[in-house]
Image (cartoon, rainbow, N blue to C red; front, side, top):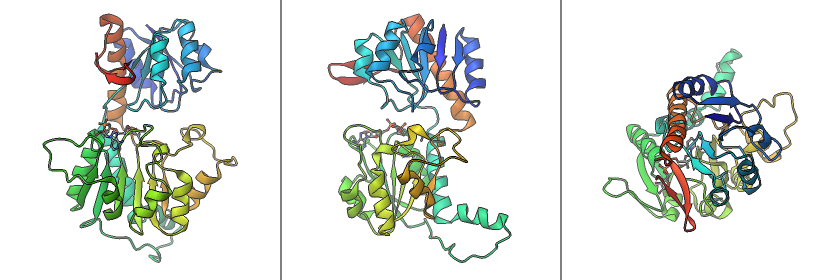
Length: 336
Ligand code: NAI
């Protein structure tokens, strides 16, 4: 099998080459993202392997079908950038990696939170300059604080366990609350009004787009810390910025950003950033931005490559896959 691998980074290659070779899959690595302009690179391939910022809309999917590609292997959990209806119409089979390391993402969310509330990002820069002053470095204890977790799936639950280890009080909101757990579920409004810290772990859907907006920010406690390691568009970035400027939001920890596609994963140092909202957010002392790196651990990379390869092998050999995303009767069904 030949698979065109888009948006390839140096850290992707070793594990994909290894698992691919074990199962007879040859990956053709391209640094460029998949777009209407680059789709032709998939010519003579059985499918494409794509990531969070690749373009998989109807236009690109139609072209892939014309090139006689059959498989779309997403090497990530989220699939909000794939038009699954268009894929089904074009006869393309889509697979993803539903779980590879919920620990990687949940631990990163906590790393961002600790960095923010204990001003580690400031201390790192100060002490490198032999500035040992503590002025402006006062943080707050996490112990005893209320954290609101939106989305209690795989990552959300690991994050809940971590927070409990810190002695925090956890409340949660999920459209489909988990049964038989000791999680204290509340409405979204109650979560917003009671939480000292809010962490987003739900998928991006039409319903969750701009879940954090000017109105919902108004419902929050003054000084709330907002963590987003899920998808950028869960937050209306302009409202977030306004909330920070108004001192309503105490801090923001962002691994994802609404308009990240043009910037994240690339080196823009020495360039003028055209996105004024992102530039302003980054300039704030109480905002920490990482560029969609929550997944990036050795364990996760290895699991992603292994599952992606096995997904392709299953589709090819068995004609079905446990991690297939099927668009049936107007909705997305997972599995065979
Ligand atoms: P999951 O599918 O296990 O859990 C998602 C949870 O969100 C489920 O409990 C679901 O019921 C809930 N949910 C669905 N619709 C909702 C709504 N309207 N309101 C509230 N809750 C809702 O997914 P998992 O593995 O925990 O991942 C969560 C998200 O994390 C993914 O959708 C993805 O966008 C993001 N992610 C980010 C990564 C990063 O590197 N920053 C890496 C991996 C995932």
